[in-house]
Length: 495
Image 1 (cartoon, one colour):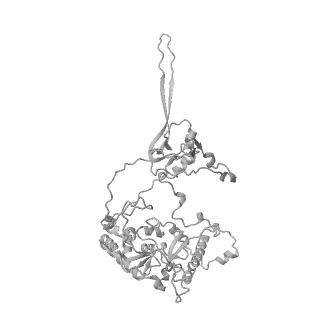
Image 2 (tube, one colour):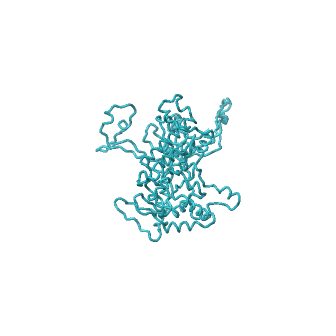
Image 3 (cartoon, one colour):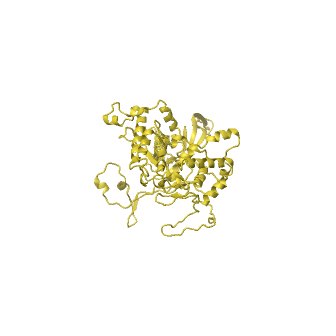
């Protein structure tokens, strides 16, 4: 049973339940432990800002108490009335395991009203709310401007504000100039630009890291494990001058926060062009080497829709995030992320010296190869992937890439050293492969009869017997540190 400490006097149970969203609304909130119960004092008003209740575990009982009164007859010889006898009967109805308590304050309320010249308030609900199908005249009426704010307060509980002195920045920091475009300014100094970013149209490539990147890495590189990881990454860049961060994580066992400091020490970051979102070894310019086309990036996204025979919900590959699960900050308890300090980085981030701890930490931070390698007969772990061309381990795809070997004449920002529309041809072939995999694993999504056009799209390979095992393994994969394939996220780590 669930208990709700209702912040009001209940005269009508039905009306009270409507303010909570009804029994279905309460059940839906109860099914998700992270959500808070919302109460709208005007349930029919879509502009009513709710108050939220927090969820707590409890171990209480719901009792049903009856008070029975028995009156005795008055004695004939006495004038005093007889005292009534009171009896209480108690019955245990059930055990309450969850309780919702309204501990916050009510938010501001915004009514759909308009103030006239004489100060009279006029309701606009019948003009802005469409309760039934309306004709064109309903949308062409002249109405006062009415744009309600989505939310007034991000928090519903009062907090103590401790006034602090002005921020003391490091030597050499200058406050930003206040102008009409920037009236607020910055509250703190920006993080140091330890990474070097390069656009495709810049002429020269950097040959060494910034002094700040060298000092930062030397500050945290205090043990033999860090020096070993640094040497391993140097060897990787000697064998292959261009790497993605996911590919590095799959080949080197290093904490992500330390990798943020090590990569700017050994490579620079490409922002635009065919090698965008990739790390390039210092001194190496892929625009001058035709053999660098195998390191170009391919932005691949799994196609879905009725045109391809399956809907997004039918796809075996899950999305990294969904906008349907988004809620305002006052309605969801979000877990607090653990921040890693420089002291933790120096201490090896909790790596113990025991043999069992070393054995478990040998591949603690490594990602699977599927995070950056595309193989025949296996589904990608995400619907959007950034592959390097050399990591497309399919013979037919490599033939498309090497169609102009020895005949590369110009490196363009769109296609690099490849022929025009090479990326489109690769995406088409990879989409057909994925469609074949989904068709073999979920035949119910496709019709039994195959048209001639579908027959032309059939691939020449047959799906392997262990395909289901590979698919199940990819669905269970959870990369560390959030979204791993978004270049914007990676840029923000260094800016």
